[in-house]
Amino acid sequence: MQFCDDCGSMMKAQGDCMVCTNEDCAASSERDPDAEAAFVTTESQTDDDVIESDENANFEGKPKATDVRCEACGNEEAWYTLKQTASADEPPTRFFKCTECGKRWRGYN
View 1 (cartoon, rainbow, N blue to C red):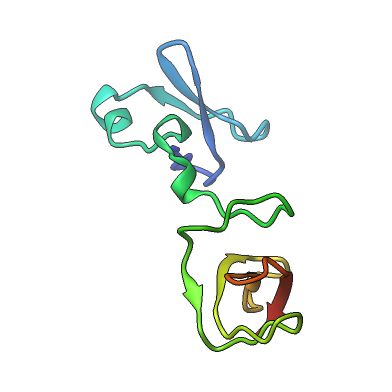
View 2 (cartoon, rainbow, N blue to C red):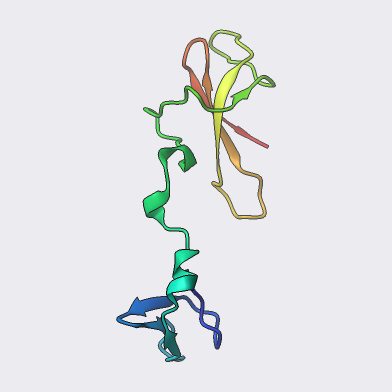
């Protein structure tokens, strides 16, 4: 991702140029192939980077928490994932799945 040097808005590729997305700015620059090689794209992203909170999510292989207790079976170990469900200055929400019975719940810090 490239940002405009003039206003800080995101730039988008348009032919051989990078054009500012801010309509009031109209800045542009030539595309730099060397700089683009260092960009990270979602094409190289794997499923390991995805935080899953869906009910059908496969939690096996995710980190385990041992500071929790399942209300259904009393087990003290659960897989968990993190998701930012509130504003950025709030802690993330932990989504748990019991390693014993599969019960799911969420925890707030």
